[in-house]
Length: 96
Image (cartoon, rainbow, N blue to C red):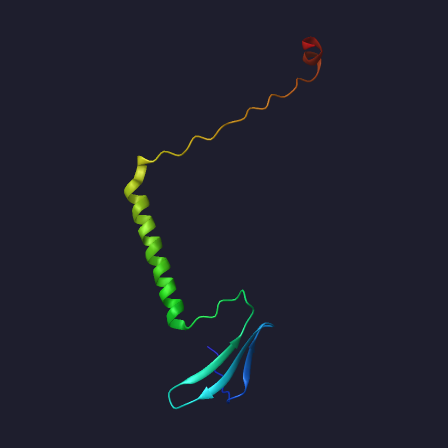
């Protein structure tokens, strides 16, 4: 972990497209502003952790369902296309 001291009004730059601005300080709270591209998610740590936990719980539930179904579900039969090759050589002349 990199620890950097900053004052109000100063910033930290991550890569080419993310900036973290220190906007206010108090005894127990640091307020920051984040400038990032629209497609980039910016989440508080506890929100990110709860999303990960929910995703893991969902995955665990899906695995339980898959295991309970076990061998009861057969894979769908896929259509098979057979391509007949045109004969080459003397056989090709005899057919025609």
